Length: 140
Image (cartoon, rainbow, N blue to C red; front, side, top):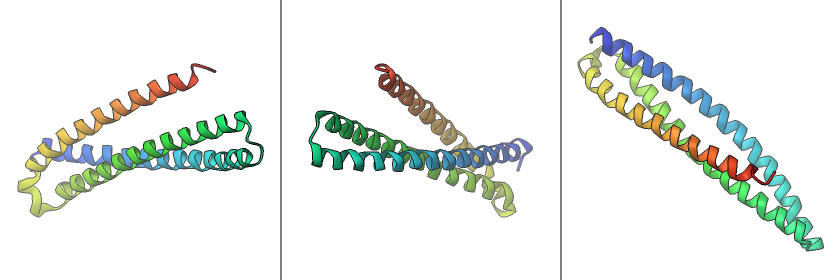
């Protein structure tokens, strides 16, 4: 295995391991937000059942929309986590297992474009998140 391929696989492994940690943290934070909003939503649903006030109905709908958006964000983060963990595993296996050294170059040239696509997807999702944030905070 050439030095460039070895360093490249090592760097890809480090990158995806780091991103896996970041995504696990992000999923945890988003999940805590989801549980908090779900408690609020249950409160508003109970208030709608007892009072049937327009304000409670509005807050209930907003909370439900927020929960749905959080669930979608968590699903995307989980998908990115799975891909990142898989790429980290493949990178370290081809980097550390000597028997696979002849195939390491092929693996590197498959993992690198996949990582670039992963990164482009993260940028697109971040842009969508920023757009949604601006939409949500316009009225505040």
